Length: 242
Ligand code: F6R
Image 1 (cartoon, protein in one colour):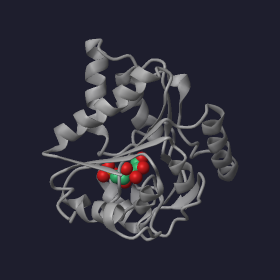
Image 2 (cartoon, helix red, strand yellow; image 1 turned 45 degrees about the vertical axis):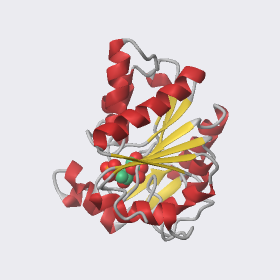
Image 3 (cartoon, helix red, strand yellow; image 1 turned 120 degrees about the vertical axis):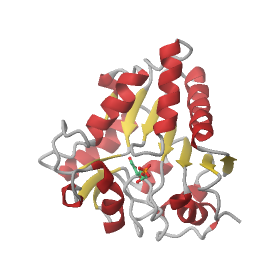
């Protein structure tokens, strides 16, 4: 595992964008795994800047979201389908037809989850998976005690996760209770993992993921089982590393 500690969020965003740009320059039709939330925003903003400047072309890449809330309309501004469209697909110039998000409104959610893993396999798997980390150590919405072998499936959001994500909604009650998320087993199949974290609130989770025992209580510790992982954090998020 490569651990990169940079002074602040801006440097983390630029470093992550460099990594993604390097993958896409080698493979213009690369498959990206796309996290939502605040952590990768700096990467997406920097990639968008390069696309707008004409120094990067992402029109050939495909993308798979990590997760989606269950039960909110796809056009709700906080559905991950809407967030990805707004913050990633349009500014990065991705082809909308090549970007998928788990269908949190499917009448048969279990079938939608199985279908999602099949769709990832059908394009040959994810080349680089961008990840954030929850303060409780989750990646995707694989909450503590998730199986390391898990596939895309329905999960109940932990109270801590719902509280943390309440900032995106009008009230805490509005935060969905369930989601579809890529499983830890699904995530570990990506050829390369890029986890980004900024801020003191992530320091404990980052330390547990990088230096703690590999244990289901910290789902992100599963990254220690992968051969190609880069963890890029700012100094505050690195503050509990030994
Ligand atoms: C989002 C996701 C989550 C977030 C995590 C951190 O698609 O999979 O694991 O990455 O909850 O969220 P932020 O970045 O908002 O602190």
